[in-house]
Length: 380
Image: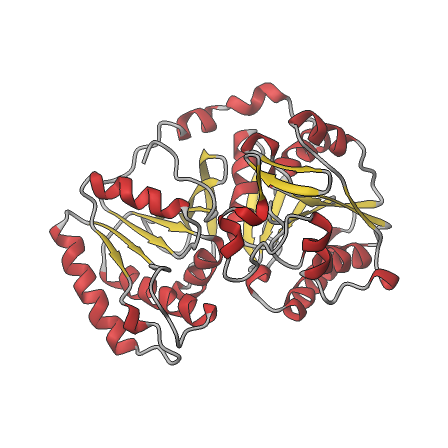
């Protein structure tokens, strides 16, 4: 099976599920990776323009056809439908010769459900949650159809592959939806939906969910030196930082004056030198984040990401640590590109969606990434 993900934390989440079931998995960025039971392609299409997202998925679909057109393809999309879901799924389905698209983004066990074509998180309407202030795809409504259509301008009702998306309020309904699929349909959805598809495609037994790898991951121990970088806008990060402050961890927000239209790398260097002093003073521990409560009048989301990535690049160069933790998919992808870390081996799933990767480009470095809206596990 090949999985195409629209961001890197979604790709890592899929890798974590494969590790949980003891299934071989490979992981590539914008390329089809090496042979494995499940091959995952991580893109960053959600943070690009719709035109660029369309082009990336068309190129990947053509490569998949040329590589081995007989493999199953799963399109991983965001569980709350951020991104150009219809546009990306349509070009994949069309190029792969599929006749229909089945979309199921829900994750009932995390309280993310669709009821009466309306999206809820823990019983709260989507547009009343933290996703309403997402900088790229704010939830302006809780209507699933409106979210899908309004975010995909390139998608054309009269000239597109037909799609379906149904209500789903429980794991049992998710299992039923996965069972209803056929080979002529492109499956698109959340990691929870992928898990059910995986169970049915690779004949995985449920009792394999507690494999040795997964059991050990719950007991993972980390070296004492670490760097956290958070670029997520989700409110869950505030709670995590509050708890970490109480544990004595130094937490520093990136200086507001660094977020200018043309980032000044010399000023960023001065800031990073200050961070190094704090890092050393606190026994090689540091959390760096973006305070979105501040004002960045001259900065676009792209500028903010570029500054975060440049800070990360310089910190990776001047700090000596064994573990990095990155909060937010787009942030992680940009940091990997900027620091030229492109090749990873998935190591363990610390909790659903939170996956530890071993860098194959830098010795003795592990990087744990998670979606911005998820919580760090209690072991932290």
